Image 1 (cartoon, rainbow, N blue to C red):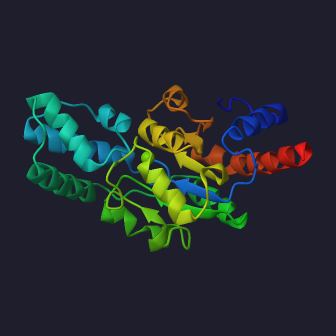
Image 2: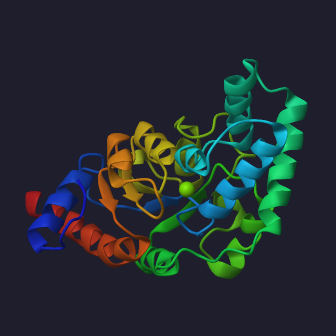
Length: 256
Ligand code: MG
């Protein structure tokens, strides 16, 4: 379901949709994606990937990298090489091309937090919800900024990165690992992600999934991958998600 207008009726319906995976109505942890969710970094990632691939002689468009977002760098490189040259990427290619892509990313103008992301994270923390980072990225230039931009939200022991998992999104492993770090079961968590593969990963982990449209990926693409609710911006998410969490708890109390 997608938020089109913010009437109370719609909010109740959305809260009910979210309770399909969280019948207790009590959310204790939020597993939050980084690129395109906490940071407005996707245009730069897409630009760095496109530069890398074009220099290597691989055909691609910027838009493809928005759709592939959430996948690990190694998976993205493998997919592009298989498509262009009909063979898997070697380990050396995965390592060297990812290093070059990270370099190109850093050379671009610095990115800022996604508008609304700080408010969203603060509102969750204020409710006593444990926040955990679940990213497919290994980009140190952003990971090293988290403490400054989101103080206290994502300490080192509450981060799932490309280094923490064998399988990247859309495999459920990143979000399952996030549940483990949060110490809660799937029924007490929400996943927040802007990308189809990220939404698919959280959904496959059995978690209530919040999709957020923050770039060219349309809300239908997030809904199709299993998002229980989709916001049209992070600012909307920051404003409305706390209300939905309140309604979920109220709905549960009524049925007790
Ligand atoms: Mg993302």
